[in-house]
Amino acid sequence: MSKNSAQYSKQYGIGIEKFLVGKSFFVTGATGFLAKVLIEKILRTAPEVGKIFLLIKAESEEAASKRLKDEVINAELFKCLQQTYGECYQDFMLNKLVPVVGNISESNLGLEGDLAKVIANEVDVIINSAANTTLHERYDIAIDINTRGPSHVMNFAKKCKKIKVFVHMSTAYVNGKRQGRIMEKPFYMGDTIARELNFNNSKIEPKLDVEKEIELAMKSKKALENDEDARKKMKELGLERARKYGWEVTYVFTKAMGEMMIDTLKENIPVVIIRPSLIHSTYKEPFAGWIQGNRILDLMILYYGRGQLNEFVGDPSGILDVVPVDMVVNATLAAIAKHGQVVIQKPEVKRSIIGSSNGELLAQKQYEILRRKEFANVYLPYGFYAGRFDCSNTLGLMQIMNEEEKKKFGFDMGSIDWKHYITNVHVPGLMRNVMKEKRGETLVGAGNKIPGGPKFYKSKL
Image (cartoon, rainbow, N blue to C red; front, side):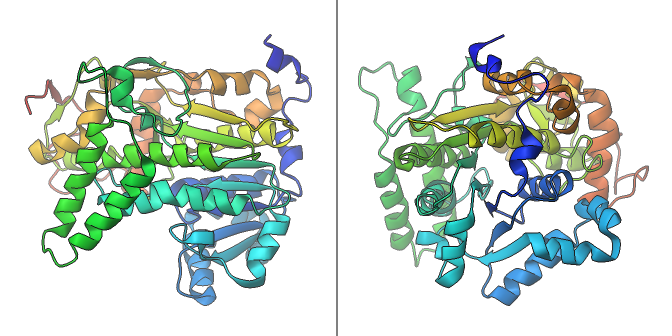
């Protein structure tokens, strides 16, 4: 047993449920896929939790309350809680969930008045789940949300008097073009994958200056205000900057810079950074197959199911790293409880990669679809990804959990039956929740079965 594990009793474990009781949370990206599953899990397993303040982008308090009811409280995801509380469900939810009008793109998150003071006085845990996940987004938009946004949330965290831990939801693919076994290394200001791997065989690789990147994005936006091709040019700028420094797409580049901003600004606040791989539908909780919106791979599944694609541009011996969202949530709550109850003399940043790199081959996972050449550049980084994520911190969390915690908050990727998950859980869930198809029906124009037998090709692009 490691020295770290020895601090925890096998009988009492981490104490996840005990930690959650009475704690107040502040969550950004609150109406998003991951945050909603997180909120549901907290309320279901720890109903005695304190207030959960949800940052919601809206024009007014009334509009924020409407979004809370329409997109969270009335969502199918919460049906287990609806059954538990019956007629009292709405009252229970409105007593726990507090909509907060704001925007992570604004300084102080756009928070004003007494509510901002209440949050700063009460909050124990901040979870920054807000992100723009479009792979090839406009550079200004991606930087505004994924890079500047985390700095705004961290600056607000430093005003919170009771803050015990700051959690930032990132992505395993911030590791860019790293290959082989990828360790859970932090990003410090100015780090670049290009310099680390010395792409250009040069003694001097360009140093990344995040503030200058922000300035470049904003100046370029202004310069292109009257340009009819502004959107295209801003997207191209993002890709150009990302690839210059060793990242494949704008999304992961701006997320990496967001991590750098957090590390620079954190001061004495304990920080946990969660880096999931490709997040997909729930495996078991609160029920199997729930998903919101199209995930990275789902358009491929859709077009393949419609008979419009029969080929996947990728490496048939590679790994497509997928993780169910409920396992990401469980690992996040375990990390929060572990690091939120430790008194730390020196600020700590822990990074946990949650993924399945230790598991299945691409062909075995049955993700077999890609739409022609226009999709190839989007999915190329994933179809040919040569890295394998080390999950030591995540495995370390499992080692200090007791058996009861492992049952309630388990995230052992090795326990997943991948064929069952993809064919009987994820795809039907995708059809039911996103494509509005009933299980067993054939997709419009389908000439293929899901899963099927696609052809794999090495890219010639």
